[in-house]
Image 1 (tube, rainbow, N blue to C red):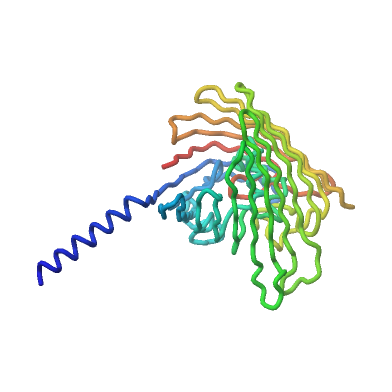
Image 2 (cartoon, helix red, strand yellow):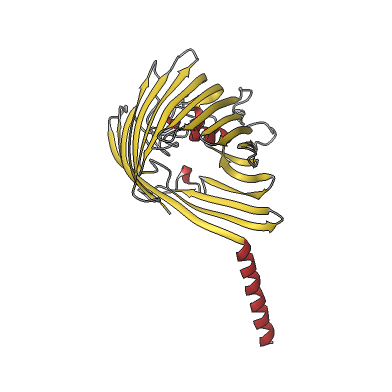
Length: 357
């Protein structure tokens, strides 16, 4: 009997070793903390120590299992947190940054769960500040409104790249009983990335119908972005068109992600970004100008001017500082935030450190 137990244990151990050989799970993370000075707020200026300024602090688990024949199972679970307080980010969600599982192979990748929208990823690609620091595009560009960066209940397909060209498609179920279209989202992107040129066209469409709000127009966001690497400098440009209710929302301290409930800034607007990234050894300079052109009756335009600097102490640790200022017109009240916070006024400066592991 003892021999049988030993053989069974040895066989189980061998099976576990075989599975481990075909699988890989990586634990990774990022911790970002900065001192931030916000100015121009209605309640006065404020100085704070906060987390997720350059990039959201996170702890993630990423895995892949080889299923044979070029097919693999993949998953990602990523939790956001506030390094200054230890609190969970994204409204207290355990894996609020991303949570998905799927299959990957020669056909591309098909995943299901909570994922980034193709439109948001297009904006991030064009942003010299990579959707963080004081110069964050989310301060003005529509990704804070309709797209809200991430989609729940989503199915996403990413094609393989052929001669630098790839595509993304995503669908998110609204899950409202009795109405299959209420809260439904879908979007996509077409991407070209070869040599020094990266061009991306992103689109997102959200049905605003909910159990309490019916027969409203869909929010539609389209953005064309390009980055060209000249070697000594990278040039960034983006142009976005926003149409419909909730297609472009004000961003404020109470709700930095522009979710329903925040004041509507416009139902018809255009976004323009011009910027540059200047690397020099461990030094990187970032600069951008963003303009929101409100086509509605209030004509609530706004322009943001931003400058930033990063110093790489190593491949995983950097020091940074950035400053941004927004000029609001005709009652607009856009604020200068950061990677995960909306900010309280039209100006901000930050000095921080982030470490990846």
